[in-house]
Image 1 (cartoon, rainbow, N blue to C red):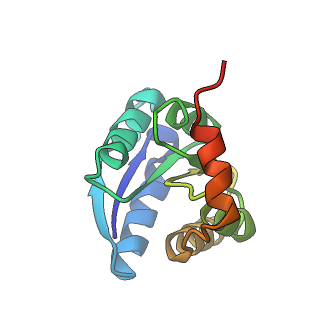
Image 2: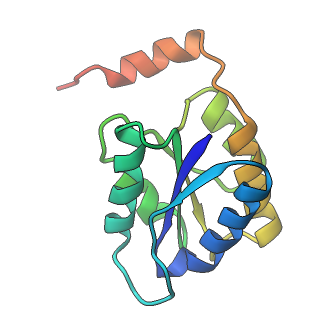
Image 3: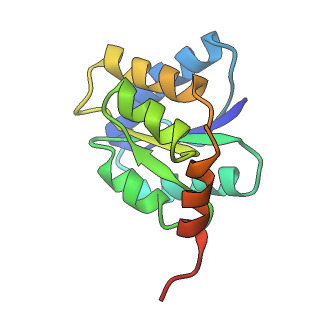
Amino acid sequence: MKIAVGSDHGGFVYKQLIIDFLRKIGQEIEDVGCYSTDSVDYPNQADKVCEKVHNGECERGILICGTGIGMSIAANRHDGIRAALCHEAFTARMSREHNNANVLCIGERVLGQEIALDVVGTWVETEFAGGRHQRRLDLMAETRS
């Protein structure tokens, strides 16, 4: 699977850790930045990952910032993106199984490294269950006024 990974300065250290982990488990990675701990604006990084997922260049995306909140908000502004902010393996699994989340958001300042890698590993290995869950995704995709 090809996964776009991006972060702001608050998630840079975990971005590097996650990229190494994903490569070790056989995933193809597209690193869209940032490339240092110098301050950057998280919406720009979210845009880069979401564009790659939306246009099909990457099957999924992972975004990391200090808390994961800003990245989640920024990512969910994009059509076709279902970004989930996850703090442990259970929500990571449910975000894939029930919600078919195609972007994972995590916070470097709120998760320990082992938990972060557990979240990422669970999220990558979990498939969408479909069935009644697809019906619910279809309902969310409808234009509402």
